[in-house]
Length: 106
Image 1: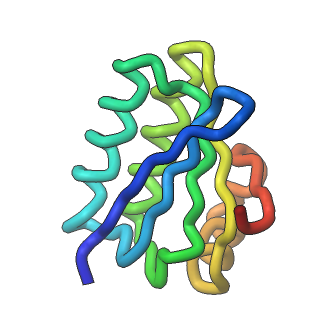
Image 2: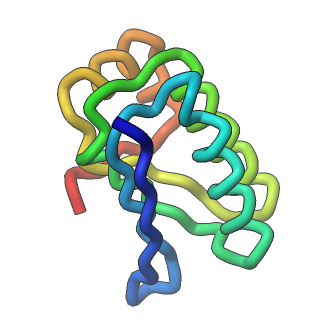
C-alpha cells in the first residue's frame, strides 16, 4: 500500500494533513517533500492525522521529525492525531511522544 496524503484547511488557519498507508523508507521522502512544500507556501501550522497509517518504521519517524523541524523553523508547528496502535507504540518506544503533541483523531 502506497502513501496517500490529502490536505484540508481548518477554521483556525491551520491545516489538516490526512495520511494513509505505510510511512516507511519507500514513502518517507514523499512525505517530507509534501510537508516542505506546504511550509514553503505558507501552510506552517499542521495537524497530521495518521488514522490511516497502518505501519511506520525508522524512516517514517525521521520524516515526521523532519516535518516538525521544518514547521518550527518557519514559526509554525506540527501535531500528530489519530494514531493507531503500531505507530503509537513505535513513537512511544522511541520517546518521541515527548517532542510531538499527540491529539485524538480529527
